[in-house]
Length: 462
Image (cartoon, rainbow, N blue to C red; front, side, top):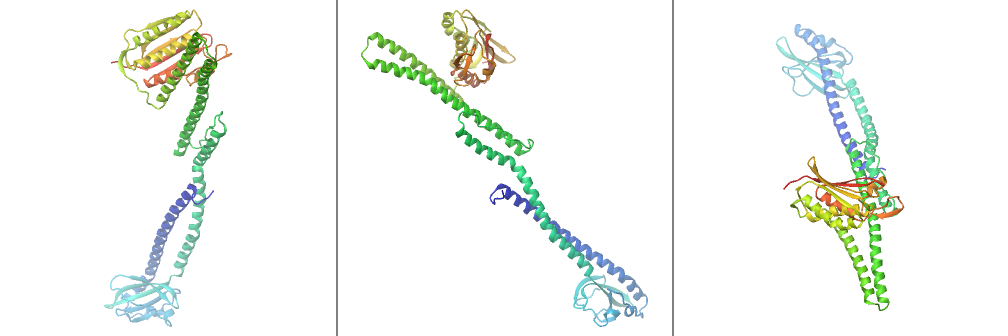
């Protein structure tokens, strides 16, 4: 939990270090201010005690007031300009003050003395005129009370600072741990997802990651990874399904080719038999070619490298050509293709891919429509976009299959649900072509009533 190299430990230590430096710096500043204030207050008290004595001495040059003073904790001496002691209080008779250094001439000065008998003293030197001569009144008081106050403050700092750091460590550990919880869960989630990829090939391996604080950066990171995991899960499941279905689709024509080749090589045959076998092989090879061409188109679209030869064209003419190509197949099933096309619909696109796009929907409409029905094709411009709609009267698509019909080789039950049909690659290719042109495909269907596919293209003129 508190591994030295873990991000949580490093963040906690950094937080405690910063807070510790700030607290220590603040305490030092407060202590310095307190020392200055205590000394200033002590100096004021000394001056307040010395001023009446100075005033009394200045008013009577012959008075010996200092010799009569005996105040507990107050030590007086009267000095001349050279520093010679003229008078001293009774409590200094046996042990006078050791005042060294220059004496003040105008303003009071303060010093701190360390006396062997009286201890630490705060000394005030107050100069004044007495009988035309300069004299100095020295007053010293013990600093014991002030020193004890400062010592208590230092003691408080000594205990409060480590305790504050300890509290900060606990708070920062809890806060950092809570803040990093989405990252920890994200790491565990990614590890579990990696295991599920290998262990559950047929199942979804993704489970949503809990988002504790959606508004902060880590919450948004968790949401982003949720979206990423969801897309990775969908992509891997789609890839697995695609590999399975494409293998199934390719297995059938390859098996037919292998069977026909083995049958022809088993013994000599008549020319008609060879021709029939070659026709079968040709059909299967064409089927393989269509599958491989579709796979190549989709792979290029996935990579964003589907190259379009964009040229000015009339979209209604491309749609007419697609309907003409499909007319023979429709007539074979007695299906009428009804067209409602606006004249001269200008567009800029790839004519070959657009023709392929329209043929895919026309082929599906004819394939899944019963005989003696109609397929309606309409082309219109609406709200700046071009809409090409293919409506059939076929077997329709069940609602549970609609979200998946554009998936590659998606297998769904059509009609009454008893017959499994492969979606192949057609709709996936159609969607890829539409998206490459900046458009989309919509589908509406009702079982037994038919389906409607609408290609929506961005309106653009020459």
